[in-house]
Length: 235
Image (cartoon, rainbow, N blue to C red; front, side):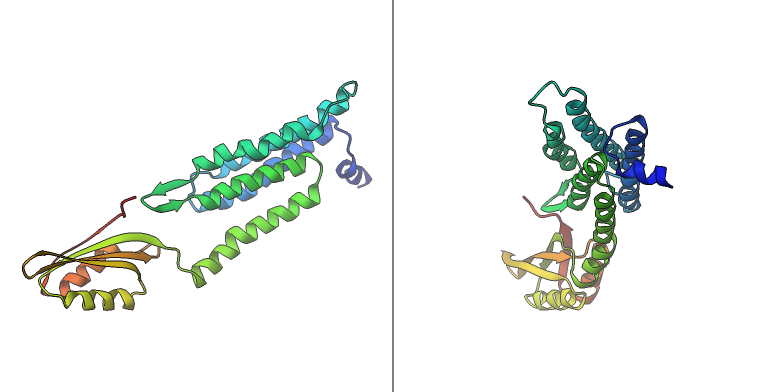
C-alpha cells in the first residue's frame, strides 16, 4: 500500500511512473472516447485514446528533458507541452462538419481539446486534477446534453418552399408548423403566376424531424397546394 502511495506521489520519472501515467492516459482517453463513440461521432474511442496517450507522452518528454539534461540552463519543462494546446486544434477542426448553415461536431472538437489537457495533467502527475476533469467532462457530455435536449431545441435549419393557388395556404402552413413546435425564423412570399403564390419559410426544428411526413400533411390538408419541398439553406 505504501508503495502504491509513493508511486502516485513521486515526481521522479522512473520506468514504473512513466508506465503508470501512460496507462492512466489510455484509460482517461477510453472513458471520454467511449461516450463519443456511443454517440457515433467522427472522433470516437480510438481518436481520444491516441490523443490522451500522445499528450501524456509529450508531457513526460517535457519533464524528462530538463531533468536529464540539467546542464542546459534554458531547459523549459513547459515548452514542448505548450505546443499541444495549439496543435490539437488541427485535429479538433477535422471533427467539425458543416452541413449548409448547420455546424456539427463542435462538442467533439471540444472534448478532443479537453482530453489533450487531461493527458498533459496525467503526464505531469496531477492525477486528482485529471480525475476531476474526467468526471466534469462526462457530466457535460451526458447530463448537460440531456438538459439541453429537454429545455432547449437544437435547431436544424431547413427551407420549406410551398407553391399554392391560394393565399390562405400561408395561414394553414403556419398553423401546422406551430402545432408541431417548429420555429419560423423568416418567411417570404412571391407571386410567380396569376393566382399562384410561392411561400418560402426558413424553419428551425429538432435534428430528428420527419420532414417528409410534414410535407405529406400539408398536401393532405390543403387542396390548393401545388407542391411542398424542403431543402438546405444556401450559404
